[in-house]
Length: 604
Image 1 (tube, one colour):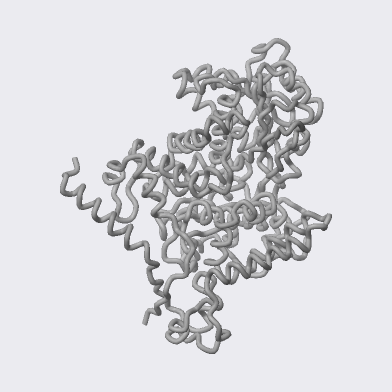
Image 2 (tube, rainbow, N blue to C red):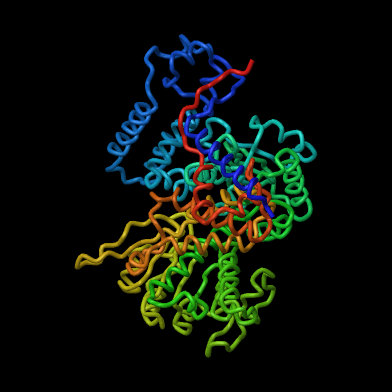
């Protein structure tokens, strides 16, 4: 047991750490003169005070007037709003979205501190530009948009060299790595090296939503080739012009990269992102017990969906204990769909204690229709969710979505198919006969063109008394008589920043299922009963930092309970264990980075 003396000393130590963080600490740098201006991590543009210009060799390299951080912020926002005003009549929305992305990207390339302040303060407006859905457009056009490198690129041709390559990254410490192989970017398929846009966008959200230090993040593209012939034949394509590696040859590349990363940064958290299904499940199984990692498509999307499903039960006027009785049809048997099912079934097991019947109320469909145990060559990951023939009268293997909706009469229709419009008018009208007084529709596929249906279509054909959520942003629907159909954005940006931050600040050696469940349940409990009654399942993205702090704290507490926490910095596991729920939230908030210019001191 911890002694009282040690406990009091730790509290005093934490108080000193808190008060010392109020004043920006100096940043020790080794650069001087123009090299500073070319480094976006430390560049302040015209914001360098005269004292710094003198001691860092900047005098004469900048216009004489010093512009404050607030003035720089206001000037950028004025130029951005001018762009918005000038493009308001543009019919090509993709052109406008990319124009907005470019102006933000130029700021990112030049001045990261100002970039992240702009992003944090305008997160509702800018998240759709640096994240979904615009990031899909960026990935599709990446070779043409490329101006300067960001992150690291490891390719199949680097085999045997990765252990030395990892030391080319200039940061001495890395807390979070987001890794993709570009094989399944959103619902767009194999985009090869263009997929680097996803880790970049994800990590921008980590900084904005979770307060990770931007100097301690690393986006990584693992280029093992592409099976996209259009890219291979594109003269501008920047990746390897060869078919994708497969089997043990592929896994050996992943293994070598992971070994290199953990040799240099053994406490780094690695998030796997947008891997095709077979490798998403294989890598999760291969690594999750060995180091701190998770797969956002399988586990992050699942957590957000579970939070929405639990909220749906409340919106239907039922107790959370009734969740195991919900009939849920899931369309899409990829990594995201199976991830949602796995986590939802785990939640049912926790509530009922019965693992044998936990999956009974879930119905899974793929491109060939309803999946039953009669299906031949069934993917092993889908086997636990295959239905027994005859469970519901008339259901057969391969039944269409329309047939399943008519026969099952589900409480929830959840789409992660990547097929735009699969929830068509007939399917939505059939949902009117649901056994629920308020059926829910989750059209979660990204980008927007791949959404299973739009909000307008859902409220028009399924009825006004539904709950609607989407993975892409849609506007709330005006239903007439002053009524509004609320559109929930069931985006994993609500969860993955909190999972990563909580794992980091607990010093978790691995990320457990209970940590993920705790994150989902925390998000589900965030909304008030009044919001839920209106059909609002998820909070406004404007409160994303508050959400992340609470989700992160729930992950910290779960890591302590699971005995996988090893502490962070000078805070050891015993001190974390002594914190109350409120103190844990405050601990997380205190460790969230916020963009302000720090005094620069040159190391001599």
